[in-house]
Image (cartoon, rainbow, N blue to C red; front, side, top):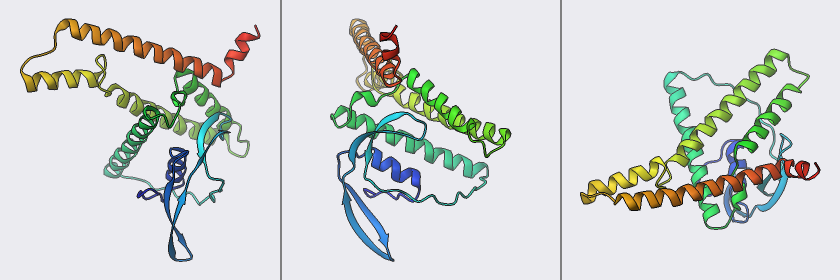
Length: 226
């Protein structure tokens, strides 16, 4: 899909979700022959498996459920897999950021602590409500899901911290690089002003995202009804 190998269900869904409104070049294997297709996912707000509404790309097909194979990885294999998954998260974050900057996606796609807590709660309810599995199995599955969520948040926060804004580590890297190349740093007054403006921007963004999270979770309606 779009020149990338999508041999896993997760990769197919991710590519469709990230391409709402844009044509996707797809090559499929149809009876042993490769067929080139162009698909444009339509943008829809749908309720996912956790019962949470999300804006996503949709093409109206259903993927078959394949047998899950568990592969035990050694130390080197685990490190390689971790690096691959981390890079996948970073590239997805870059792609989404680019779509937001270019206006292809709404800034409301960004999530804050309220949405994260909502997702964690929905994951717990969904996993623990599976009556066919034993309590131990459900707790183990929930622990694995939470570890994945924490890892995703950690990578996303690390990526965000590297954005070249003055009060973030990415900005410090840019300023230090400029000083190393030119032999002189920026004035203290300019640094303070740039940090203050960036702080106001991030504070406003945080408020906007939090209000969006409250609205998404239905908490604003609850407060209005008090």
